[in-house]
Amino acid sequence: MKKLGILIFCALMLSLSCKKRAEEVIDCGLELLFTSISYIANPDDPKEIDFSLTQYDEEFTTTVEWLFGDGTSETKTGVTTSHRYDTAGRYEVKANITLSGDHHVSCSVSKSKTVDVN
View 1: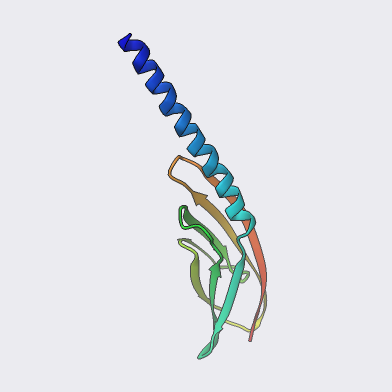
View 2 (view 1 turned 45 degrees about the vertical axis):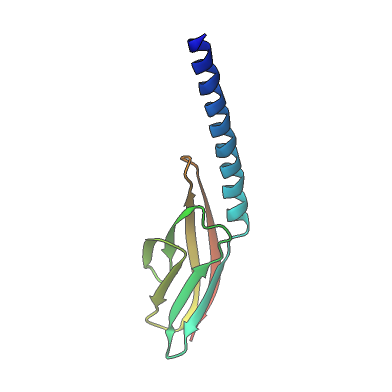
C-alpha cells in the first residue's frame, strides 16, 4: 500500500510538472511572437543608439545576440543595449533572442529592424 501511495504521488507530481512545462512552452512561443525591436538615438550623440526589445513577461531569462549591421555584435542578458556607429547611414539590426524558463524550456527567434543613423 505504501508503494502504491508513493507511485500515485510521483505520477501526480510528474503530471503537474508536465502541465507547468507545457504552459511555459506556450508562454515562451507567445512571448516571442509579440517581441519587437525599438530604438532611439541619443540626443547628444545621434550616432549612439539605444535599443530595446518589447517583453511582456519577465518570467523568462532573455539572452540576445545583437548584430548591429556594421560588422559588430554583442551578446547580452536582458532586453536593452546601446551601440555607437562610426558613420551615418542605414543599418539592418538583427536580434537573435533566446528565452529560457524555469522548467528547462527555451525558445528562440530572430527579429530585425532597419535603423537610420544621422
